[in-house]
Length: 232
Figure 1: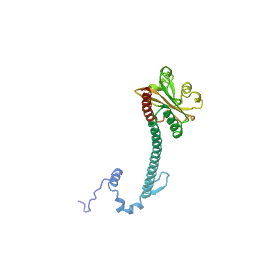
Figure 2 (figure 1 turned 60 degrees about the vertical axis):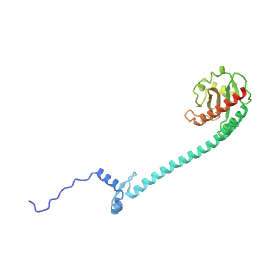
Figure 3 (figure 1 turned 45 degrees about the horizontal axis):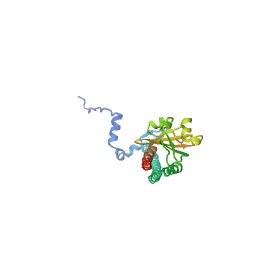
């Protein structure tokens, strides 16, 4: 038997074991600061930086990303606040409307002044003439051209066909390059609200229609009330 003490070989630690240990002991380098002078992490540009510098760089990058995300959220909140104020003014004006002419004025002022629409057109389906100078009246038989817009019961945005554009905006259609069309429904289809823009990219088929749907629901209820009052 050898008098020398036998040296027992310990199995080498794997990289995963080292990483797991450091993850479970995040303060390891606090008690072994001398190791920081020997540890280096390759930088993406090929240079070398200390572990602390690399960690600081990563934290700085994450902070910048969070700051950018926060700025986007703040901008979106400010935009929504402005949209809410504009929508509130329009809804209040509609609720105060006693006649169809009042409705036409409220729509014109709100959509053109606050929401930057260049043209507006309010069409109602009726077999008899309505008491309004600012609203067009169409018989049911005349709505075949816009029937696809009516059947969806949902707002649609984008560039209209030349025939549909002329039907909705008449002599102003030559200036309208894009439009939003909102069906007005309360039990049955009462009519259409058309908003036109001189900018071909202002209304696009990919844009959201939540605001337009809300406008359509409010306007439909106001028109339904006024029309029933006129029939009484």
